[in-house]
Image (cartoon, rainbow, N blue to C red; front, side):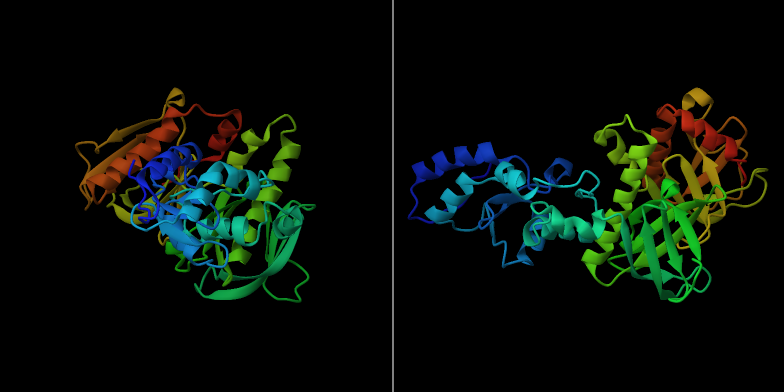
Length: 385
């Protein structure tokens, strides 16, 4: 490991001795991002934690709480070294994460900037995980407020009133402030939320999906205040957590937490053809959500043009690189064939790397045995083109 740079007033022997103590307390950077590729080359010398480069920028934005130095490049005085040695990441987690709710989303290196920033602010600036009363905005079981929602037809974002009620097991939104009836009722049972800033075109963009007549419906929302939209996100996770606790009374928190919300396995453009495989290929936006492969004309469409269920190899599903030799009409050269018990689905990717990533996403689903409830989902699919 590289050694930190200390001022000349601090002798080499003491540096070596203190570094050994650092090694014990280092662990991973406080957001546990290094386990996914980050590297704790930085430290907050006021909090006594090692952090990765990505999080160091966020810490710099809260200077009243955290002051940051490079382990390798900056000079350290004796008091700062002593402080780091007597604190460390394990001690920080024990203090600042002592009361993190099970449902609260812990970001990873691959998550958007907003989630990582609000996690750090929640921990150190607001100290929400030391004082549970500060968690009320997302743990109370009821929440209402105004969010900007993208119109289904015109694409404009308009302010809409949203109400989340655990008691009714639903998220609702209203087209007018004085409306008696909601425009939509989204059952917590079938609801998912995932941050999509690039797709939505706003750094706080959240995509909410729910099932309507067993088809996936998308809505796209944001709030100007980062804390507000992350509180909504965690309130939705809390509501799903409590629903699942009732639905699966014997399940542990560790079993339920992965089911609270899910990021998509893969999204992007591919070409597709219809069931007869005689018409030309058309470019579509695809989303792989667990076992549902959905395709849209536009990434921000409210409803998918079609959905394909991808089951397990034990149920007769296979993923193949390439297309049948007789296939015509595709512009992109890198084909994929999905074989299901009923028919073959043909796709084409623009690049080899796209093909490789899509095949990996499909293979992940095919390799995983199906759960009992997934057979019921499969039965609803008509395998339309």
